[in-house]
Amino acid sequence: MSDTPMAAPSPVPASAARAKPNRRGLPVAARLVVAATLAAASAAAFLLLFIEGSFDFAFERRLTVFGTMAVVAFAQAVATVVFQTITHNRLLTPSIMGFDAVYILMQTLLVSVFGGSVLAATDGLPKLITQTLLMVAFTMLLFGWLFSGRRGSLHVLL
Image 1: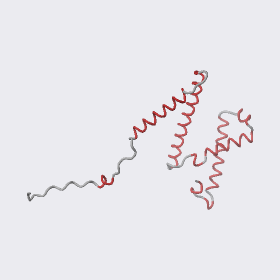
Image 2 (image 1 turned 90 degrees about the vertical axis):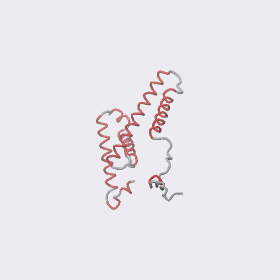
Image 3 (image 1 turned 60 degrees about the vertical axis):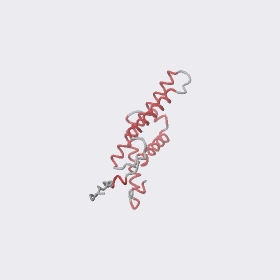
Image 4 (image 1 turned 30 degrees about the horizontal axis):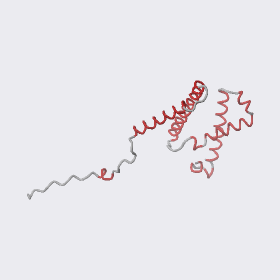
């Protein structure tokens, strides 16, 4: 043996020693492709399977329903992201705050007070403005009461 010392192996960086194996499986891009494929297959199954009677009529009706669901899903997603951006909170959603329940309450009260035929006859912008003003007023009263006095905390609200 020679008197020259052998080079010591280079130490493993601390971050590599602590790194855990990736347990998520597929990369994000692959998971998105799988989700998009499942969504497309589900949409095709909804549009094409179990059609009885006139194919043209049923397909047109299902296409309208599917388009409506897609628009509503997109609008709900955008509304949630905008709401979370404004409130600077990734967990808080309009549904958690109860805005969907306020909408249903206002619709129920309007039908109870004015009747279904009156509401069916009044469509368009005046109905939208009236419903929006009622919802805003009720929500301001409710949240004003919840945040006033000793109970004024977000924890009580949630």
